Amino acid sequence: MDVRQRIQPSQPKRVLSVTFNEDKSCFSIGLESGFWVLKASDGKVILKKDLKGGIALAQMMGVSNVIAIVGGGHRPKFAGNKVILWDESSQRGATEISTLTPIRAVRVTSSRVVVALQNSVQVYRFKQGDKLSEYETADNLGGLVCVSDKQIAFPGRTPGHIQIVELATGNVSIIPAHDTPLRAMSFSWDGDMLASASEKGTLIHVYNTTTCASICEVRRGMDSATIYDLCFSPSGAFLACTSDKSTLHIFDVPRPNRKLDATPISPITAPSLNLPSSRPNSSSSGNAEANNGWGWLAKVPLLPRAFSDTYAFATIKFNTEEPLGGVAPLSEFATLGTTKPQKGIIGWFDEDELVVVGAGMEARWEKFRLAQDSEGKRYIDRLGWKHYYGEHQ
Image: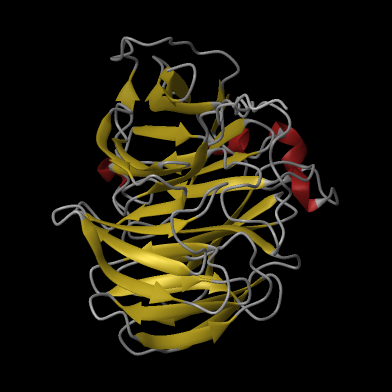
């Protein structure tokens, strides 16, 4: 009889999820062994927490010692229907919140814990963990939900609709934003604007969160794409978008009360990081006509509206590569942290600088800067990139 011990293949190093904190200064990653917190500006590790089990989601509350975590991956540390509010200062879970179905996403503020399930969003009191409210949604496998100081936004009961809830009063507003299910949403830093994109991925809408009126509509492209993320610049002057086309788009966002001198763009400067740097595959424009993507064709009458739509004023490629195999398709039965990894998660922490971070085995951090050339034309430049976790590190 063969009594030799079987050699178990080592689990490949893989990032299960990426989330940014409120001011985009830090991002947290869920791992098969615990979670890390890293600084957005340089991708350096701030905290490593080994919990001897998988953490599918880790969401940092502001800039604090509190991180909301949810178990997942191939060997989950906790059940997938529990949120643990981990207090790093005391090295323990301070509060535990349980739900009846698996958790898809969690957001944390100083007063609220917002939990997204497949068909509902639940709001809990931060310290006590008691439920304050619950809202029914359309199917929301991706856990789409965003939070500001004043409001929360999530899918409505009708696919393509958005529900906005005022935290102070509980008042609910409905925006019929898209004809197809929602794919991405983001509040501006001040919470006054909300950007959204649908599964079609061609148009991005921006709304006033107080009146629910449309502020603008911009076009990512003519062909369909999967939108990975949307993110406003700190001032709200610009909006970034990433998609499975491996392209980062930067759009202007019109705001009538915005001062023109409040959003400076850096002149051409040398990259400040000692990392691989380049400016390939980037494009730019310096005027409104160029931003419609079609130049003089936009002025020809009776052409389809796509010819007169507003396009990004700058684009550049980012990395979306990932080794094939080893992941399950997103479904209601798949364990969180075992499906296709996130890519293109945006952290816009400074008016001129932003990062794009991806999960999976090819876990990359890429840094970009908005700038303008001697003729005043704006473009986006890659300052550098690195593998922040995994075999390449």
